[in-house]
Image (cartoon, rainbow over all chains, first blue to last red; front, side, top):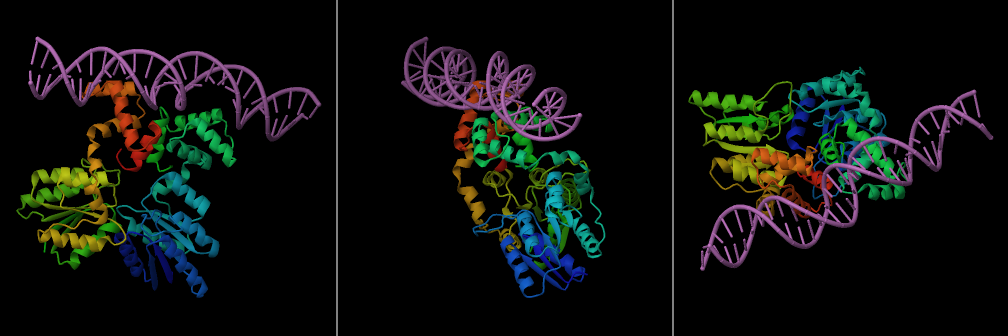
Length: 222
Length: 222
DNA sequence: AATCCATTTACGGATTCCCGTAAAGATATA
DNA sequence: TATATCTTTACGGGAATCCGTAAATGGATT
């Protein structure tokens, strides 16, 4: 079994259970960080001490706090960690279940497993840990499998997210056109933006911009 | 200490920790339900068996499932339970931290305490249980205290929520006007709706309808 | 009943969105 | 280079919003 595991999780009510689960799997060294920044420092120090972690189990969202933090999300944390320890195994343990996000985590961040917090997630987490330890293909839970299958999700890209976020900020199409020109994002003609928004409206079955933002907010895209 | 406590919480990773906390407080009977409907049935049966629960600790949001459930949220659950056992003590244990919601729970639902899931919430939960057991005023955590103090929050009423939700559904002002007329909601003139939306836009510093929905979605109002 | 006051509704012009079509520009192929 | 094709941009008309002002309505008071 893994020897040294780090848990990045802000909620004490969850981290305590995860620690317990790891103990039951006979993990020797179990450490825990409530902030992404702390988690990163622990990983860094462990490398320096020539006793690196074998596995990171990380949440995605961390509650903002009085504390100033460099890393605000689990996604950023994992990306930073992979830069200094590319071979570390990573499991994301989060309540998020949006296909788009899960798919992106496997594809762009290269996580080893995704376990969705739910009614029977501790068993799933333990299973995922076993499978990764044995270098086996992880079985995808129904949610994750669905996310990976859903091809259409791949067409929504950073550009669209950008556009939706600008809309959600209350900018007009002309505003966004200028903004995109400044940032060098193309296409940036207000007519093109309009067309792209129209595609998004068809895709998400939205009847107008307000509806579109409401839907994509619910999906966690913006 | 309380003798018989029910936990309504869908996430196993959290309920396990809460159970443990209650054990440390020497609660004799600790039961747990993963669905609101199950929680309600347990409360009902306990009354019938002349061994009612003393305390309910409930989450607010429950993940939707394959299962069909009558009660979808902790708020609904508590309201239903209060109808059949008005004297039961209730603690809401949730990650939500929106002032509007917390305030409404104290005012409209009559909960005894609100503990926000966070980095040190198990201690807070234990403290809240002690205080309620001793019939003392609960100390409000900074978040909750802020919610209770914020007077302005009270001006946003069901009417506004209704209006915002209709907007978020993609309806036009004329659509909403008809809808409100059907439901007997007044005012319902499209001009009045416009005026009300304008007030909301000023209040939330939104520059247009899209912005307004984005903001209120973030606040958890819709 | 008459007056006042607040709320609701109506109206009009400017801006923005919405939607289709056409022009301009870019890329690829022969 | 010429042509075809796709993407991006421009344009125009109709609908919805945005925002200010004025009229109508409904209570409360005298």
